[in-house]
Image 1 (cartoon, one colour):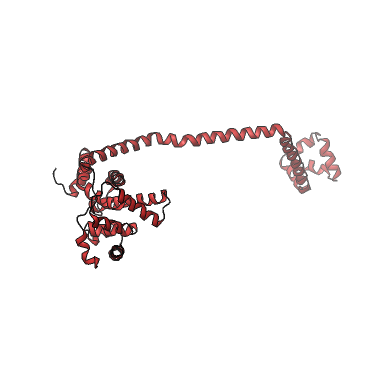
Image 2 (cartoon, each protein chain N blue to C red):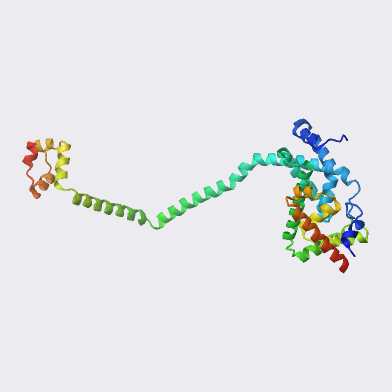
Length: 150
Length: 182
């Protein structure tokens, strides 16, 4: 059997034997039109409420996360109160190290220059030199009379 | 009903006042051709009805942006074809059907279809068609039943004419083999 030759003979119509319920094509345009209106109104409604309905769950999750974070932080602080004081101790230790570091790195000439620039000699002239300053000048064998003369 | 050309229908559709009227005319003009095109793919009438209505909703939503690069008829066919193929793909995925199960599922649909009124030869031919992969079946239907030219098919399916000819040839061979063995 050569089908390619006979194939045309097997064909009755373009429906291939299928059929439809009576009046199907008469009522179809109205059905389609109705669904089109419905889909159009549905999509326009979706735009109106869509933004809020999209945002709402994220807002809820966001606020829940904030509340949880604050709650956990407070609970942690309540249970382990030393955590902030440890921080303060650390800060104090750090500033001490910083002061030592600065003192180590500042040389004598820098200090004299600083005193000179800031007109601190006036206070020396007025004999208002603090005990610490005198002590420092004596310890380092600095003749403060030179400062007075300048 | 006045017979409008596709260009006139499109012009009417772009006018807000006559939009609904022109869409109604487009549905009336093409509903049968698209229905039979879809029906031969999905077999069952209810499925074909669903796919056809969904296709027209997509057409309604997309017709404003249709740029007339192709003929209206070609575009409508493309929408309907894509919708039918997507429907079949979803069906396969939904029921986890293998190729053999899928084939027998479609054959059962054909057997139980109350709106199939073909004779024994048509039934056998349809069964043979259901053994083909979806796209090959599509090509065969368009060429054999719908008498479409390869050029038109090429525009609808966005496939080269050569590939379509080869696909149709393979389909015919397979149908021939099926009918000889059954």
